[in-house]
Image (cartoon, rainbow, N blue to C red; front, side, top):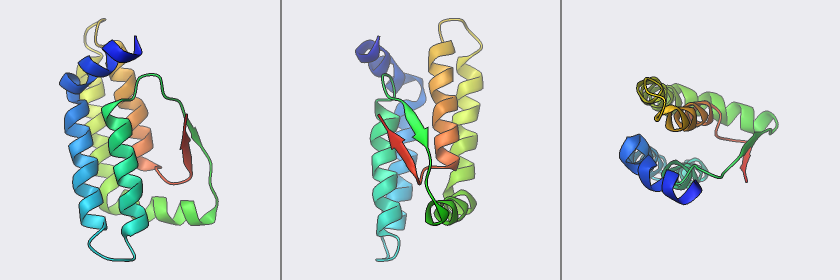
Length: 119
């Protein structure tokens, strides 16, 4: 299911989500201070392209918490709303439910990308 799911995923909003992360990463990489945040955005863009077969665990400390707050204010909330909208659209049909669940996973990750580990 992983390979086929990832191929269909790109047509069901995954490519648009990855482009959102790429744009956010390029904007963050303009300054030297934002490069670590931009690099995380590029990692999330890779996950947004191929989410099937990957698990996400959340953790981190105070630094991750502070970066997540800054991220949520500037980029996280719009990207999370985009993923939530796509998730609701995909869950309308039975066939789209697995894709909707992946969008919900990406929405949660869009709000808390720092301190997470992707397996």
